[in-house]
View 1 (cartoon, rainbow, N blue to C red):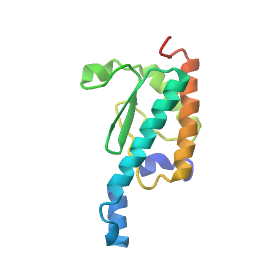
View 2 (view 1 turned 180 degrees about the vertical axis):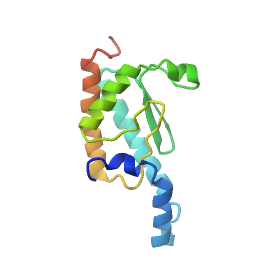
View 3 (view 1 turned 90 degrees about the vertical axis):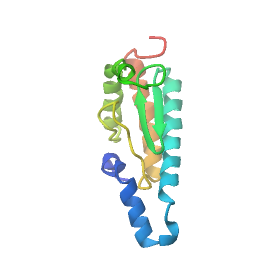
Length: 145
């Protein structure tokens, strides 16, 4: 995947499934479960990178949609979301951009990984996540700080 292609492909899950259906009707319905598996992998890699850097965050996922809130505990209402650490998110997001990952620019938005995210792009994203959480930790936004 080319640099910068993450956000251009984030909303493509439905389009990708439609294209798959057109190319090979026998693959109908394959896209959503595969996209969800990619979302689950991304969720696990975010959690792993945050824990390794000792950064407090909550990752929430529904299907393929995934987002990272810089706070402890689930976000279930606006007051929870409003209490997130915006400075930590900004540092994290900036570091992701510097490493070629175009994540949604607000922690109140979700990323939508799709079948367009191949192994190469997922490995690049994993590496960028590790670097980004290290930047957050260096800024003092750790679970102990």
